[in-house]
Image: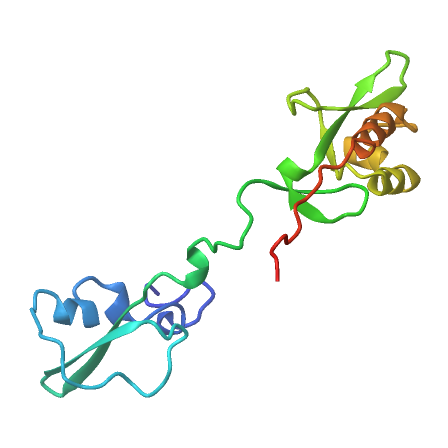
Length: 189
């Protein structure tokens, strides 16, 4: 009964064959310790998933058994390397327009309790205030969308509608700054 599965199936139908279960059997054991030179066979015509892979084939004949071994060494993929156009730094989502942007380009806001269960949303200019934060483009349109959609309540996980006047004032103050003149193409014809 030792050669049978507990449910009565033959042991051979469950799991790998005996040659792979017992140590000292299989292709690795047959080629272990043999220092074989790479064969002169060209790589197979079948394309691998990675076109930059280098192939090395070894054909080994022992008695009536012929083993054709292929070793594939892959180079790191292009996606493993950082692309220069990819953003560097943490990426956050604006709660107003729901677009992803670098965190340095967004404004962090946090909820501050007034003590009686009401909350006020304040701007975290230093990005160090405790508590859950939400990120927002410093544009009046995104602030108005976030207020209209009640995004501050969801993002900051608070109850009731918070006082957002501090955020609106801050963004309005940013928007009324005199814009710096940008030099245009001043070349002469």
